[in-house]
Length: 246
Image (cartoon, rainbow, N blue to C red; front, side, top):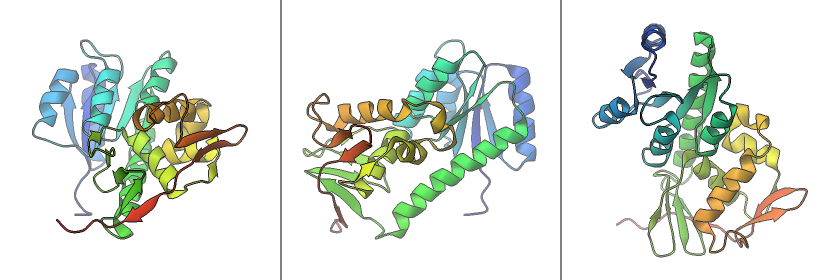
């Protein structure tokens, strides 16, 4: 299992770049499938699941940000954005909706390979941490439950609430440190990794998005509270438990 090659889906509408990059990545040991647009990517995903998606932002038809949201929220796939120099705003939006990293064109293929391996290590680390401690243990707070293995969040009525990979990492950080003040630098590192420090408001935007999903009133939150000058605190008791076998 550990020796299985990493599967990549490369989505870019520039044939020359896409084909040359696919050839380079294949020589590095990756299994690569190509898609020239979002429609082709979606059809590919119907019967094939990659370990990571390399996604161009600017494409004809459905743009990369729309596809990124689907990949993150509906499929839970790691995403690295391929962006142009002038797309700083789009990069920020992409990170906010859950992309794991980005590279700016033109880029060195070796740099992209390093980013791919870094994102996959981070994803594997998160999965290993969930799997090694009490196997199927879940978090519970005031009727809400988070299942780390399935990355599934349910509300007190047992309704599944979709969350992105970044929102999952942020909520997990809070649930692992209840009632502790976590400053922005620490949260940014947990949620975004390398690129986090580039965007001071990245964690605030992620917190706002998460609040809209778990708070009764996101403007007067009872779970994720702002500590002025200090960061944020998850102001609820959290129970970790292993559910009874069904």
